[in-house]
Length: 242
Image (tube, rainbow, N blue to C red; front, side):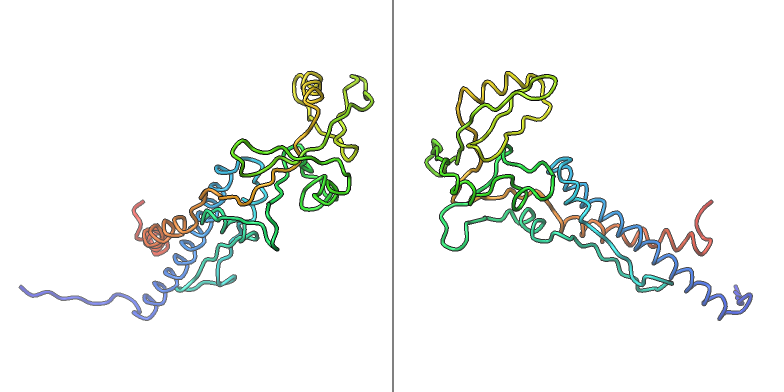
């Protein structure tokens, strides 16, 4: 049996067309996989921390190189604008007070700035310095004996608005927000009966739970990339099944 073979067309043109198809396929695969890894990391943040963490989730950014044109050796980069936050929750970091201080001062929900800017330091409405300066702060120990709740006394302010809602004033320093929750007046009366509002939790250290898996997202992307590249190359070169 004798077999014969011959090249139809210009071999250099055929090879050049194949290289161009490979370049387009490589860029397509890298661009798609980089975006998927970024979206995977954003979903990790929102699923772990809820809707209030959209800012941290959207801090994940991506870029594909080269930024213009095509290449057989493209690269995709995914990074975050808040690396310290991401690193802490990926490792499950242990946080301690600095500068010889004994406790971390963690603001409670009653002492949150509710997303508004210009209302104290680091998102707090009342700072530890203001607590000390007020001369009204007092401590309540945890049952475990490992920390304290730093409180301010409550007093009732004037009723305001058409619904005559009770204003709660913490130590004369700040108004305690109750939001638009159902049964606001009953809630306010219950707070007044307790006579205090927790403003800070004082803890010697905090162990953050591991909530993110950045390495796992990157490894999954690398495993998907070869198959994505081959499929894209077949489409670009016209070999893909219709």
